[in-house]
Length: 555
Image 1: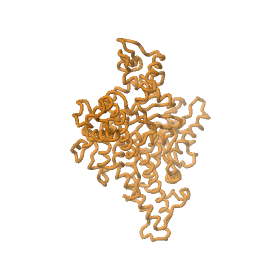
Image 2: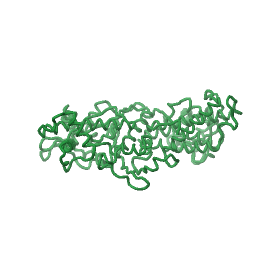
Image 3: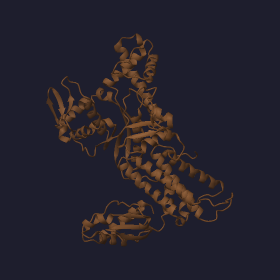
Image 4: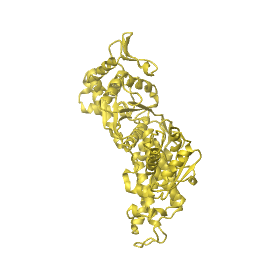
């Protein structure tokens, strides 16, 4: 019985108890079952009786006793005890069945339907096409892609989206910088520097012979168009090599060219939240929690960046997404209130239809010393700099394993080591160690039977029980990672699981000593432990896959 099966059994016990109750008590769709801190308290525990006591108008312990009587009859439940104010401590007759369930489920183990039916537009990275992806954007690439995978594993329909600003002042500065580099002139004071500027400028000139003899306006137009395209192609290639691809690449320029910006202004006016003052058109976002109202159309008739934000949000909603999730950098805290207020002004529910996640900064050190700036980018450390230093797997894993709410300092020396103080190596090594063991078993002719034919009741060692409980927790961890937008929970669980497996391996011999090719193992415990090992491999592989990290067979 897995934790999910046990939760279903508890819900069934509640339903049976409610059927005979004189009070109207709603049967919960699901309940929480957790591992108790001490194994002496059983395999799992639930506080459902405390939550039902008030509507049942009974003391929690009385409710717990009633539920315990029903739950004791469930298949797979060995014993149920009432503890404290009304907790149910539950013991299973064969916790080892978890291993069989994991292996039978295979790559689907951990998936759930908690977010089933939700359509989510997940926007992340969205760096302007004026330079390579910097370190902060790299963190969003790793976290955003992992979050998309976790949400999909929980049943949501997710579109990965990249919004690129190919219009406005920054693009003008980018074009001017390319033009200056191509002519060997000094880069404008507010322009862009770095080796990549010269590279792109040369590409544009090579594709347009005679460009440098053209008038300035024509040169800038060419650099604006071809330079942005070249830069964005480079960004896409870097992200693809990092294992991140998007379903939608959305151009800001198309909002203006298609008339969507004007349409957004008209839509917001129709909603009745605009007003005119000082010759400008304003959106009354303060009605919905913003710190100040926002200008939509300036006194000179031009629109603002916020107006484009409004058009972009309305475009997302018009594409049928229930929830629009924005992943923004640490310098975008002010966007939370204004975007939520925008959704409310558009007639949407700001608590459901829009969600803004803010990530904190990343810094790199090597043996405690700050890492110098990138040669190519000039002033920032890029995605490629990090990958060149530690590889894709270590880069992705290290960026995902911490909460986005916390600043992150990565030590490149640690991430480059193949030692247990390197978290990604620690987890991947556990998977490779299992693969090696299973290869050895196969060489000796020890082949697992169907999981349900293995006598899992033999898995009674404390280290076996620890491992089984960690395996059983994986679906709950995936569901909570999706709900809380916290893929780092997957990484931390994998690290815990890897440690639990290493301790099991050191304490419990899997293949008997002196085993010879073609010789039958001495007892069924070998097969039971092999099943447990295989189940651990499944969870490690599935978890690493959710983070976009490989699960190597050899290291």
